[in-house]
Length: 158
Image 1 (cartoon, rainbow, N blue to C red):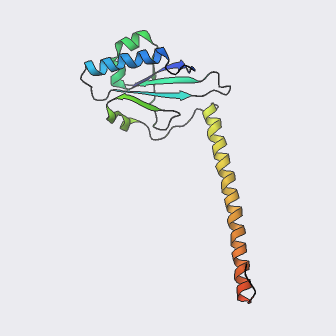
Image 2 (image 1 turned 45 degrees about the vertical axis):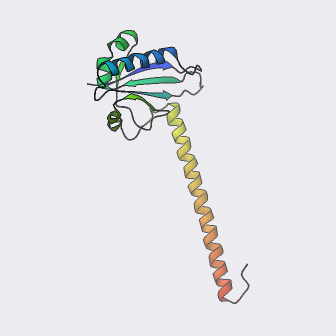
């Protein structure tokens, strides 16, 4: 059995009626089926470069996808990889909490995506920060050596 996702445009509306409908249906199924093991629903987002084409992803675990026939009939679901616990804006919505243990530990953005660009920018920023740290550390070491030499020569150290 596979994980499934349903993709919607990310709207400025706090509660997209379609996403709310999926949640309502899933909750009813979860309760009706006595809270089955392996049932899980999560949300995540994907950005766009212009910010106008961002997406909301609704993930259903294999058990949830199998049991939620009404969701399958109303919304196009596509098989997908197991979501990762560190995807952008990932939220556990409901279900068997042990499903969280099935999530991949790390998420890799698709090459060319806005998330990949953001990750690259963050790596570059961290790299610049490490270079600046190394520069300041070398300066501090040089100053400490200068002060040690001055102290050894009996000079005043400020």
